[in-house]
Length: 404
Image 1 (cartoon, rainbow, N blue to C red):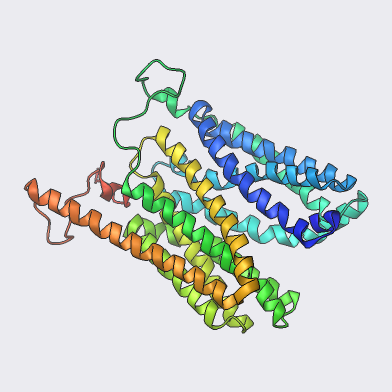
Image 2: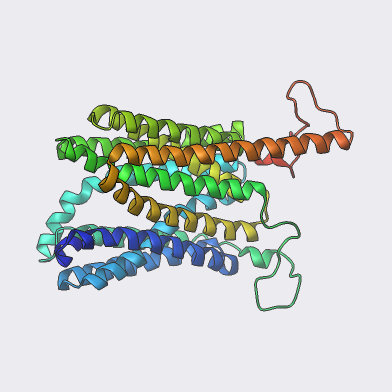
């Protein structure tokens, strides 16, 4: 639609970049707002801003104003941020379920919308013709209705802002109640790295896959099948990813996710000219991304007070948005200069570097923990090679629960 209004392929690529950056910026603002007013109000305002964005796109598309379309797309990014941030609300609403599985349940529900949404484009085109606007106007009308419904549902779930639940520590105008202790831990850095690298690799390698298939004579039907397989891999295995993260721990699950991404990139580089093998590689790429999002989100928000957890959630979404922007723009430049196999090789190299860094960091942390236990005189049970689960330690974060 932007390409039709702007009259160039360059204009066609602008909404994607603006939307991603809008989602990243909105995630930071929403996380700060959640600390003051509560998560439910934050998600409600994100969905409400998305409604305004949809209306701005509709009005601008009918009048043929490209700046208005871009502004509306930027505001619509707040809705996407609300969708992704909602996965962090699940553990708070279901405390009896482990954090990874609770977050995975929201990603699993996203599968429904990811599958149904693209199939509604035909209906939206009919609505667009009835309004004498571009065909895709109907899709934004539908999005406005859905986000409005989401805002109405979420606003009923009132939550207490975390800053109000913790006694203030000093009399300033800023948010009170920060707990003592380091704000950044090795798990925070690993989680942020995994989220950013996974999104960069996934967006970069997948964005150019349809173009690669088109260059080798594949039709839209086959391209659509590959894209559908990739989307299914991105969301359908969410519950399995949650259980793996709970059982293996966030660090090990992140390592497995990066290995899958590295393998998917290698397969894409080798079979880039064959549509069906490339589709299998894109499916594997989606599976690796899903496990990385679940494990990275668990590592990013584990073992911290809620008031700090909200801040980290916003940083995680911002990192993913920046990585997606770099991946989309960088993959196009590499594709134009070296071809698709080089895009996949670069993606595999980034996943490999992150894999080595995460393995080295995890090994060092576990070695330090073992030395600390030995120096304190703790015994290590032979059956598990680790001390009994501690509600305040890494075992609780990795999914173990003390018996009642």
